[in-house]
Image (cartoon, rainbow, N blue to C red; front, side):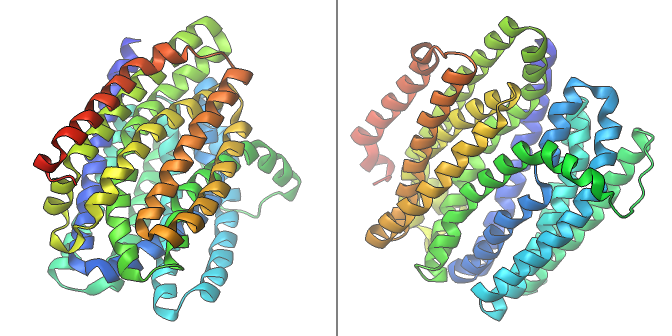
Length: 439
């Protein structure tokens, strides 16, 4: 337990630093480009975010889970996947590029293609980092991720200072991602005494590889589609300036998802191992993780709710002030998504990954439906409403699956403290909101 706490502290600290660097990156880009160009940037980034996870197809999560249970086979898992991933990623790049050509004008298309390439390369980096995670080498993965985020931020600052515009921003990010991935690949190869060679994949093994990855791949893909699709839908219903306004709030909301996710990624290998070896120990550890993650989600949501006005004004400036209302409403989505991440990890650790995939598949369908209904009637505010409705729906579905398939959760015990926090802060919001300028 002490090791879990130590690793959680290290990874949470580095994760917070990474998210801080990423947030600063997004703020600099948003302020530099302005709402309209930032809308184009966001459309391209979110489109890439939908298709690029197809290139990963759950490889990283597979290596973490299987490698944690059998560390001696990590080299085997990585060798097995790398050639498959190269060919698969090339196909995804072509398919996503063809679709983007039909959807967008030439300017947005060119930015989108660069983003797709950059994001696909990033998922190779994630695959190499998953080796560190599977071996519980938290210090190494933390250094890798913080270094990458720092380099990307420096490139963005350099492009802004040189006033090179949107094209050079995304090209610089892509080149640095490629170079950094090569560096981490070299380190992983050397530390694990592995010898990789790019070769034509043995198609007799292709079916076995896909069958192994299918539950992880589908759930990963559906999760990222769930996160990204809302901006893509919005791009066809409002102008790029409105997309930019929404994206400024949305990137902070999604950024707040990172902390519970970072903590649970550290805990996942231990929980998965406990499920296999000691079911009673697993139940105890998992219930505690859900409770603490729900509390973290409640605190994060409360912070956004109370200080959305000041967060928007300080970070983005007067051009984006309308997004402060979106941020305060989206705060509740942070609370529910924190619970969803915890429950989803429980399904993964217990070998029920396909039900996690089903949940996010259903969530994506309903988010699309909610978006069309609410955006038509309420504009960008409707997009936040659809996000919140989708998160609440996912919470109920995940609770149902986990209770039925794994173990009945003591819901009252787990939710009492976080709900007290949320209700108390909401009352403060209602009573003193005008003083805080939040409405």
